[in-house]
Image (cartoon, rainbow, N blue to C red; front, side, top):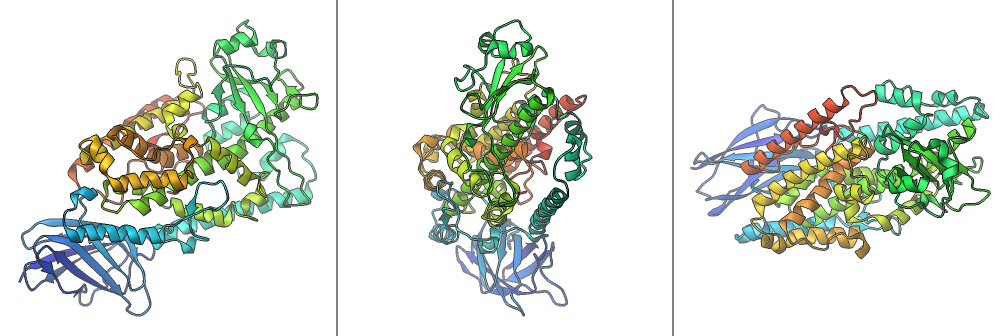
Length: 617
């Protein structure tokens, strides 16, 4: 009788193992096997991190194995199990891989296909077509769109983390991380309030240091020591945590009536302000988005305020960016003066502090929350709804949306909800942050997520004119590496543009993003469909770059872009493409490390060895 060797790999995360009964059935082109209990005498099967092998003997030839069915039945209490993969050695000595990377909960079952990526047109066998269709039908019931707030991109239909499908909930370790980080934030908030009670006013700027946890890394210490200086203020617009607002000023705005006489002491080229603008030496950061946003009123004992500044900056003879004029609100007038470096020391410093405060609000709510987290969630929901696990684009993107939906759901549950941390700690809490997102969505465009286009649109693309913009330089290197990789993967599965256009599952994915995520806004520029391999490669690059590199640049680095611990792809050409991708990223790491070697303030946020795959890894 034919015998198969079945190897089963259990996940290594907490509580991944199970004591439940596990049954396996094989579905082949010539027949189906009986259910086989996978159990070894005097052995604890399916422990966390285990790789167990079993001999399965069948009554007759099954032909080519098409599906593997895994069933879990209760032993004592329901015991969830995380199955990484199954491999099958056939009686003829062939090996077949069945990636899973999913939880089996309750008395559940999972039906797996072999790991070869297939487009819908490649499936000619009825049972495989049926499996593909049923998987999407099930997912579309589980992953439903919901409007969390009017005007927001749609999100997952779940009130809290435990309502999510088990496969996208945090692993226990990640859940603990989130709880600890949240608790730490609340603890710091409590400390701040405690100090506020016993300290009615600040006596010195050094008092600020007392409310922060002591930071020991070199960069933070340097910023702490030099934050009051104009050079550091300007540098942060290029390479700080929000390097996406600064743009070249091509015309002085009427709402900022600055004259040459006012800023003459800051100009170093013996040119008028207008001439400096024409020469490309003037830059601007405008916080118009904050104009009219309601300040936080949730605590009646605390008066909070918001500014909507316009900040003019100048590229000096050393090619460094420095501020030369600040107006704290949008409408000019006697009550809205323009502050200058020639003003009294603390007048100028306080003006810069107000700009930094405004920058914080835009960074946290728009640059970080909206343009990385919420956008990545849109891609993630559409991915699960419209692409089956066997689809090559699902296999490519799934690592880049990992835990994204979970962390966003936690944020809606604990951070940006009513009475959440934003309401307790931010001047835009109490609804202001919601107003900001509703406004900013109108400027959320596909082209603004295409890194090279976004840089060019702000007039910041010249490395000669703006030599110290490391966010741009490193970002372009990473973008190009990702695009090269996605183009290779697209080329493996789509031999021409027609195959792209005829891939209905892909088109449904792209349409879901446009119709639901972007609310069908034509002005967003998001495509409704994709008709060429080149455009598909660009689209995939946007998804991956937004979730990984862009998030790392405006948040923090963990690791690691290009590393795929879950092996959804089994084909050799894709694995070779991944190897080339990693080599390209390693080369970028070397370039950045060499550039940073002698810098007092190195920039490494976009070094690939510090870029996580997704916004939540």
